[in-house]
Image (cartoon, rainbow, N blue to C red; front, side):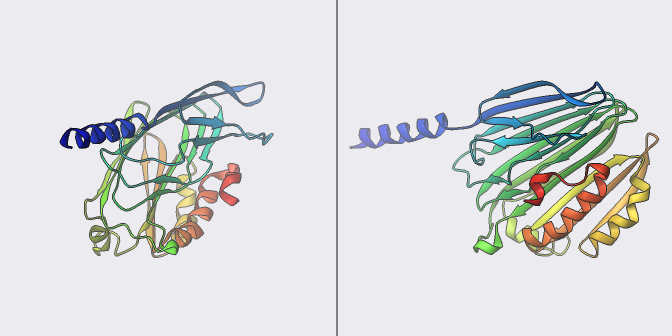
Length: 284
């Protein structure tokens, strides 16, 4: 009887281990023949990249996690390289869902690079964290002098419209952004294991469960500060610095749910993304 139980437990553990996601994809964009074009594309496992035929510049790419979500033990990596003078906007097919973790944590590794005179809009749709999920993301961006980038990450802790609550779990987000080999932005966000209690504190989120961080590195940043503040209103803020001869606009948004967050996030992304506007999938 004991032997049978042990064998069953081992079988269950092996099944869980064998089903973990280990996927990575890379896209390289170059400026050629008067417009931004695909130079190289690599896909492995559940990580896929699709290129809608927009017929316009910048090139638009859509990231897809074919696993349908993440849970403990999953590993997902995205790499984007934009060459000199090229322009690209990267988004996701849908919100990334992080489910309850039985063991370990889900890890996402993002690596971005932009050449001189290039532009990258890193605009994934929201990450939705479920109760008892465990998630860790690292984002490293390397911008050449004169390169521009808009980096956006939004997170929703549970879908309140579905009656979901996130009481516990862990969520980590680490950003390192460099321009001309100089560190211009670094932040580490962590909440857990008592997520609901931590977000309820006035000094953290005051009970709001949806939030977004937007970082624009561009010569356009100073002119966009006041329009951005008008969109953000009282639930968030925006600041501006001059770094390495370029502007850095950092904006935060907070909301009581994902729907309310998106009502301000969409026009803010549209403003900061310039002529590229909003990815088509964001408006569906």
